[in-house]
Amino acid sequence: MPQTRIKILLLLAAAVLSATAGAETFRWIDETGNVHYSDQVPPEDAKHQRSRLDKQGREIDVIEGAKTAEQMDQEKRLRSLRAEQRRVLAEQRDRDQSLLRTYGTEQEMTLTLQNKLATVDSVIRVTESNRERQEILLDSQRKRAADAELKGQAVPKILRDSIEAIQRQIAAYTEQINKLEDDKKTINEAFGRDRLRLQELRSAGQDPLQFALMNELKLMPGEMPIVSAVSCRPGPACDKVWEAAKSFIRARSGKPLVTDTSKVLQTAIPLQDQDFSLVVTRSSGKGEDTVFLDARCRLSSLGDELCASPRVREIRAAFATYVQMAVAASP
Image (cartoon, rainbow, N blue to C red; front, side, top):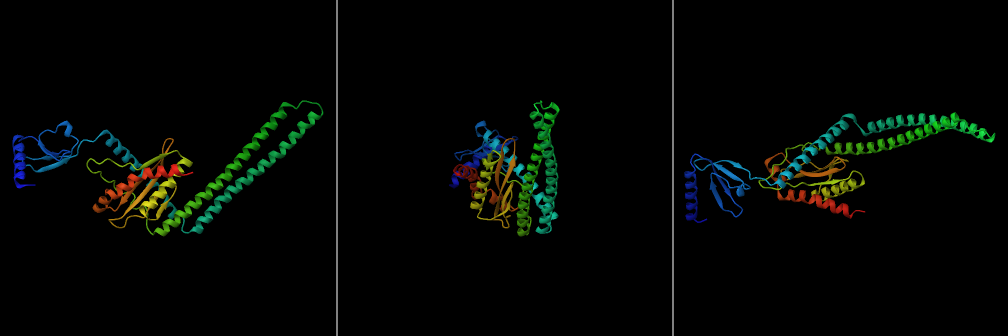
């Protein structure tokens, strides 16, 4: 900028400051790059970030520009998602610590599994025995009813009611046995997940969630928050979203998952300022689940800059579209 123009601007600024002595003075730049000085900010310029100046023209503080309704809604949504993500991660961390405290070896886990299954099997055997006794009684009652009919006699109501009651009891025992068999499947599936998770925790050699609860990143002035989340109906539809999220995080990070559970996906913790971790959590709501991706960086000023960088913003911005397209293309 030519020296003459700089001098003119300084003189203008000094004139404004002199005219507004005793009142607050603000400095801001509009969308065309023009610099303004005034003791009042016109409504149409309230959207711009502005500096508050003292009588000597020195900056006292900075006032953020007014936010649009859409920007405020997005910020509120992002704060809510991050709060829910912290809750899900804290729950996962509690489960991980419980696993590590409870089981010293996989053999201990196997023994615990066997004991649980043995307990369920014993209940199944008792229930089956009760059902068999009822089936024998039902056969006896049915023969009595058949004998009455052969003799041309009406089957007594008390006998009919007894047969119906026994049939209901047999059906209840059968339902209980089926539920217990389902419980065995659930126990086996949970054991499989816990065993894999224990292996992950042991191989990591450190707490894979130790950086997961870092402070939220501050938004840049005027920045529209990126809400990298996908909502889905619980069940098969959301399972597809979860698999697509897993594919995305592997492709975009280029790193293995150190946490791969039904609620949390996470790459390795960032060990360098130029490194970051991607975290995806799945939380349940009223009638729908939410799958949310966010980035985690080192707890440093450089780490904060990285998480706010165009590189990480692009990853977060691409998440929802990638997942939706992957789900639409799946069979």
